[in-house]
Length: 205
Ligand code: PRP
Ligand code: URA
Image (tube, rainbow, N blue to C red):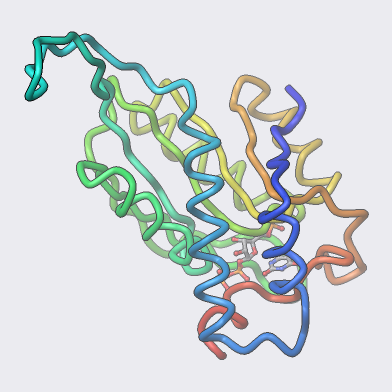
């Protein structure tokens, strides 16, 4: 399945400022939040709803309300920068956490933490701003599938061709939403042009 590319002038504007090496962590966090809102809306377009009869001040009407529980699972640490948009838009969302860290030499992600809520019947959205080799995303999706997630999607900010290809190969039924599809990985497995190390830029490390 090809990735859903967020196409909105505001998304392009925000990505450019995120990429800019002069953008400082406080601004970077705000920009990531705003882009997260756009991505959260895009990734939840097809959430299930059900009828709800209500009365307006003028007459009865049958409206629709959300009927499917939502679980968002950030991959620590950079994924934390994409959680608040989901919390603000969907106050009933549950949050799970998967801690993965890439080895600086091999770029292979090592698991160091996992805490997940019940996921039966829920839309589960795994979030990680950078889809580079795809190793972290594949591992995280393996974990949530093992924990019972069946209706799954993955949301990133910047994706590489290598990461998209690996996800398509390993989890072909999981839709991928992203705000940018970049050119390639460098030898250290960083995305080009990319925006550098997202976690470092988010938290000033
Ligand atoms: C970064 C990023 C992703 C991962 C992507 O995390 O946030 O989780 O790399 O790379 P991959 O697609 O090649 O697996 P990192 O390991 O740097 O940890 P951090 O979020 O704690 O900075
Ligand atoms: N992780 C990042 O933060 N940036 C990249 O370009 C690749 C992995």
